[in-house]
Every structure is written in structure tokens, then in C-alpha cells.
Length: 257
Image (cartoon, rainbow, N blue to C red; front, side):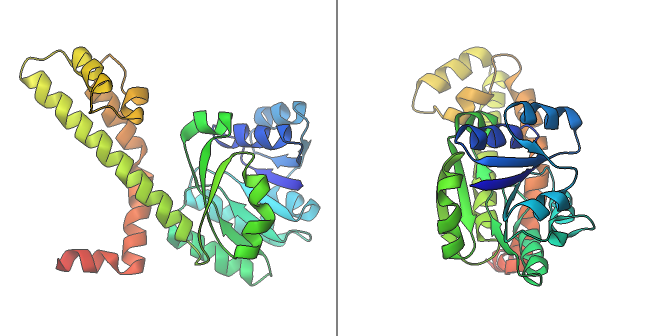
């Protein structure tokens, strides 16, 4: 399948590489020329802009770092919305349901199908092709791209409603953040009681408290500080979640309980 791929960062590059390895014809764009050169060396073709990609192929995927970047690439000046050949835009980024709906409405006015498709599993999952790929959009469009998405992981069809996959991704991230908070609190409690944090982590990862995320992300040295850093990186996810809850009315419902 011919695929346009925009965004060759920590997640985007290994996903684009997986698509190339599965014999998809990839045309790529990134503002980082070094990343673009690397993917071209693997067999991709280079484009000079998001619009150029949308002029060349019918299916465009994007993996971008922020909701603002996704909105600009999808619907801004020189974005895929101005392309002459594009039929569907698959957003692999975590942008929140509010932004996903915005993109859906603007692209629909140009007869371009927007497919929300955020991923979970981190860089390791992107490199191995084991990501959880959450998808919302028209079912027939999901069927068109399903085998392509299987190159990067396991696709899950969430539903037709725009933004549904983004809501699922944010629910996942909030759960992960809460696990990290709980782990941090437990370690702090133990340290204050005189326990060795390194030994605590070894015990937690060997016993019933083991969690593959803790095992992977909590290093022996200064676990609480590491956890604080990880949670800070999730600030954008939490802001997306607040916007999503407010737009769905869940915020008010939660306040009444």
C-alpha cells in the first residue's frame, strides 16, 4: 500500500521503518532533515511538505508531538487538507478527543476521512511492532487500513464516533499515571520508615506488586525522582483529559457525585 508518513520522531521513525519492512511504499516528511535522510536510506521517498505528501498518496499517517502540531499539519496552510490526492488521514498522535473532532470536521468539508489512531506501547513497542493501535472512524475505512496498521501493532476498533480512540488512549494514560503515583507513594513511605529503595523495587518487581511498567521504568537509583520526571512528561495527556471530560459533560457529572 502507498503510505504517506509525517513525523519521524521517537515514535514516528520506528513506525515508518516497520511499514517499509512490511513492503509498503512510504513517502515521508519531517522538518528534521537528518531523520528524513535516515528513513530515505531505508527505502522511503522524501517529500518537501505535508501538502506534497497529500498530493502523492491517498492514505496519510502522522505521528506528531502535540495537538497544536497535529491540527496544523492536518488543516493548516500547506497541510494535508490542501492535497489533491489524499482520501484518508490517520492520526497516530495523542491529541485528545476535542482536537480529533476539530480535525474530523475540517477535513470532512474537503471530503477527507479523518481516522483517530493513537498508539500505546512506547518506543519499544514501536520498534518491535507490538503497539496497541486504537482506531475510531468509519468501519469500512478501518477495514481498508487494518492490515497496514498491523505492521506497527495490534489494531483495536473503538467505534465510529470521532475522538473515541483518543478518549480510550487518554483513559489508558491516566491509569498508567495513577500506577506510577501509587508506586512513588509506596517507595516514599518505605524510605521514610528506613527501607532501602533499591531493595524495595526489587521486592515489588519480584512479588505480587509487580507491574511490567514499574519493572521497566523504575531504575535502582532514586526511584521517586524518576517517577516525578515521568509524570511531568504526561502533563499534556492530563490537559487533554480535562478538555475531553468537559466537552463530554463528564466533568460536571463527576462534580455532582
